[in-house]
Image (cartoon, rainbow, N blue to C red; front, side, top):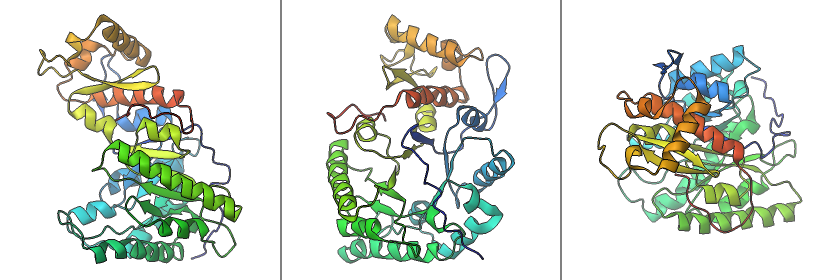
Length: 347
């Protein structure tokens, strides 16, 4: 196999921000005006980036791969997740060669924006890792990264991942590494822990970006593009110059009966399920201003969307589409603000 060492990120800018709506969502649903639409249809219409795990969401991933090959005009970037966490959480062994073969097959590595390395998670699911396992995981992850870039068609599309809790020497190694043509790694993943308060994440991001900025200055290299794994916190996205972030909250929050409303560039969660109608959080018990804002958002989305339709959405298929539309409104208003005061969380 001939490898192509082109840096496909040469002309990538930090804006417009790549907010990735991970997960497939509903395939088709009937909108109030009789239009039939699925989450993928709306994502393509709005130009959403998309992330799928190759081993858990293969059907959806291949459908998007095929669509993008047939529609090169589509502006939706496709990102491939290694699915290492999914395999680890189920106690399954991760086959890196199978992952590599999957990326090379059907020109998936050609089509995708980037693909995550096969990172190693220390220990076993539900059991605290030993110190030895914790120290060994980033070393094995790096070995996997080097193994992958020797075997995929587009080596520079493989993204190594720096995890919260790892020694910064592993991030420095990523920043200093040069491919055989002399280029630095152009895209790096940054993965905070999900079991710590946002304040702890902010402290970690602050230190992480100090390391990135200082080391890149020393090396005389451009800062790498970065992706925030499973992190779409406004205070983080606004303060630190990442290129992309992913979240499943658009569909997850909808499953709990919530919609997301953009208010002054921020997101407000509103409960709209036809259950617990007497809850103070329910749209029926919100202020006239909030109700009016939701009504206006429905009008802007079109397709006959209304508060009544959202409340009576017993199958829960309209709320995810509304959330996608609203998150796109937020995405359009996103402005990188540098290291300003911490803002409220998005999710």
